[in-house]
Image (cartoon, rainbow, N blue to C red; front, top):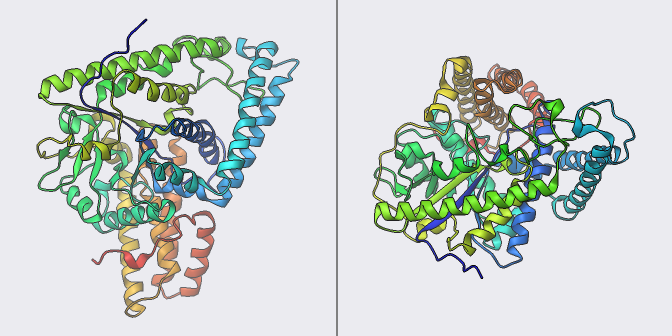
Length: 520
């Protein structure tokens, strides 16, 4: 009989960052609401299913889960909830079409009628399960679902600033406002105020730790190079008590790296290959250089065997890393693996199954699993550190969000923020003291925050739906300027009508209150 491996020193933390930009009312295909519904069905529902399954086994402190306010808003939004229900039903209909297909105009092996019928039958069952789960758990929003996991200590919640701005480039007043409002938004939805955040893009500028401390944030994420690769302990930043935790790239890249990683294995479902009739994805990766029209049909048993192999590999990687890092620093070490939540299911179809098995296999292999809050409470902290200006983007600096490719967006953001702050300050000053709440001022700040979302320069720099990203940035900039111009010129009724009109599409963060904007 094989004996269980002995315990290893230290603590392992899995951090997941859940983020999409505001997509409701802003296009469907190829970029827009479809992105939200795909991620919801392929990643968010399966992740919750995994966590609820493990919680039923009395497992707790499993994952540190970052949920940005803009994602939380969409998971609670009535329009998005209705759209998601329709999307799931449409997926089931497409699966039924595949399951009963008699002939196909798509000549690829994975779209051959017999292969597609088998695939469609499995997809139909999966869609049926998700429709039932959505109707049972999610129809009143994502907040009750996540709150149950929080109340049961299954997860630690990381918050973040409203609309995910690249904080180092943001006006300090708006930066403070976005963070405080983001934490308040989380408390309103979940009855839990996060004590940690996922800093958007893991972006940091010296001094931001003082902003975090003032807002009640005790810890945040940076990328490994920000700590010069020494991520074995959390580090208080500067003269503050705010702790920076670094992503361990040696472990994280085992799963998802720029050049390799588990999702590229030939047995896994291919993300990029579609059946042209049903829009489903019936092929496996097959090989890195195999064209889409030659990829083999997806084989669940082959994929399942690959999952088991990659679970074993990851567990051994974590064990070795904890052992080596503990020996290096002369005390039990902390290893943090961090990923986008959307990797698990949306980009990597088998990811949720891998997660469930890993979260069982790690404790069985003698690895203690806990959250970032557990790491702080258990003293996995080292000496204070001075962090450099950094991010988790290309080059680990700010080039993705401030480089030549996006210099126009940087200028746009600066101009729009200046216009918004000037207009809001003047409007509130003229309304008396204390000023009444202003729907117009609120919408100006709402559109401004959507303008400065870090997603738009990222998409432009990476040439990923760049035209859509530029369109969205300029659309929200136009909304800000249009409302602000009407208000500044004394056309208050017109400004109100404009604010109401834009709010129909961009009505997220209903509790946002411009009166809480810090003074100049």
